[in-house]
Length: 196
Image (cartoon, rainbow, N blue to C red):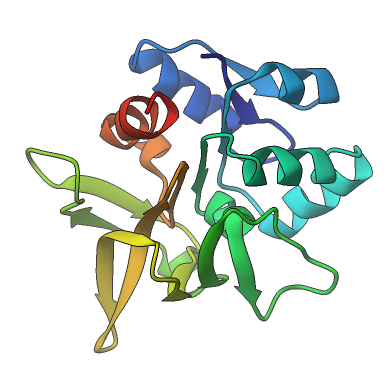
């Protein structure tokens, strides 16, 4: 299977390196032919509003949306989680998501850039030590459908918020695993979702 990382904005290079560490070759996907040639897609962190606008500007939005909703395995991290959510709570003006997973997410839910943090998370489906999760202006999941599996959550101000979820062939995390040397989230996507 050929993997692509959406290369419109954000940390797509880091995701490509993480996939390489898992033994998978991946391309930086930013054209129609790129997106039509791949069998699985990662949508990186960055600015969800910018990713949405650029996807429309380059006439890629509908193609990505169609491919995801037709069953293409997809993983979205941070801004990518927002882009694969069916619902964005208080979106920026004109902002749309590709959809694909029955969740409602809140942008910048954990706070501004200066409130970024790291945390060790136990993640369902990943054995061994906790995964080091890097949260940068991260979203969280506020509601989800009955078919959504919660893989990990974080407690904030007395409430528990899902930060890693999966539904069918779509995986989403509100944190950035590509910014660490731990590639188990990418391995989970490659082995359990993309090649299922």
